[in-house]
Image (cartoon, rainbow, N blue to C red; front, side, top):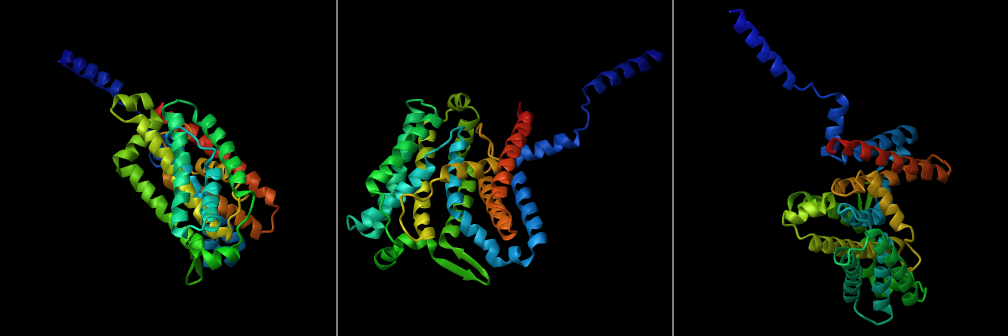
Amino acid sequence: MSDNYEAAANRDDQLAEFVQPAPTLAYRVQNRLHLTPSLVPLLVLIGAVVVFGATLGERFLSPFALTLILQQVQIIGIVALAQSIVILTAGIDLSVGAVMVLSSVVMGQFTFRYGLPPELAVLCGLICGASCGLISGILVAYVRLPPFIVTLGMWQIVLAANFLYSRNETIRSQDIQADAPLLQFFGTRLEIGGAVFTYGVIFMLVLAVVLAYTLRHTAWGRHVYAVGDDPEAAELAGVNVKGTLISVYVLAGTICAFAGWALIGRIGSVSPTSGQLANIESITAVVIGGISLFGGRGSILGALFGALIVGVFTLGLRLAGADPQWTNLLIGMLIIAAVAVDQWIRRISA
C-alpha cells in the first residue's frame, strides 16, 4: 500500500513540474497591448481630451472645437495613413510630403497652365503620386536598396521637381474658386449642429476604416504584415514579396496625391511651399500611434489616433495660452515613450 502512495506522490510531483505559474498582471497587460497595439494611443487620446476638457471646459469640449481638431489634422492624418502601410512592411517613406505637394501642383498647373478640365487634372495628379510610389517600390523591391535611402533621394528629387516645374508660383484661391472649384472639393464644409466637418475630414475617416478592414480581413493585408514581420519566411510561404512591396508604395503615393488634393481644399490655393514638414509629422503620428518601426505590428487606426493626439495637444495648449514650444516638448516625450512601449511589447514575441 505504501508503495502505491509513493508512486502516486511521485506522479503528483512530476505533474506539478509542468504546472505553469499564473501570468502576472504585467504579462497580461503586455499580451493585451501586443494583440491590440492601438489601445495605448486610444487611451492617451481619451486621457488628453479628459484633461483638457476638465481644464478648459466648454472652450475645448464644444462641438466646434472638437471638429476643429479634425480639420487641423486631416492632411497629416491622410499622409500618416500612407506612411503607416509602408512602415508595416518595415520600410519608411521620407518623400510623402514632397509627393503630396507635387501632386497638388500638377493638379493646379494642368488646370491653369495647360487648360485641362479640372477632372482630368486631378486624375493626372493622382497618377503623379502613384508614379512616384512606383519608382520607390521598384527600387526597394527589385534593386533591393534600403527604403530610407531610396525615399530620402526621392524626397530631394521630387522637392526639386516641384519647384522647377511650378516656377515657385502660387495659384490663388480666387482663381480656383472662379475657374476650377473642383480643386477645392475637400475643403467644402458641412455643418451638423455646432460641429463643422469638411469632405477632407470625412475622406480621412473613411480611408482609415477601409484600410483597417483591408489590412485585417484580406489576403493582401495579411501579406503586408507577413512581409514586415519576416520577408524571407513570407516568401517561403508563397507570398509575392516584391509585388506586395510595390503595391504598398504605389498605394502610399496615391494616398499622398489625395492628400495633395485635400491640401488645396484646406489652404484654398496651390502652393509649392506648403506641407514641407508632412514627412516628419506623419512619422510622428505613426510612432505615437503604436505602429512598430520594425514592421509587422500595429494598427492603421493607431496612426489616426496618433494624429489626433497631436491635434488635441496643439489646440489644448493653444487655448490654455501656453508657449507653443510646450507642444513640441510633449510630443517629443510621447514619441520616446511610444518607442519604449513598443520595445517592451515586442519582448512577448521574442
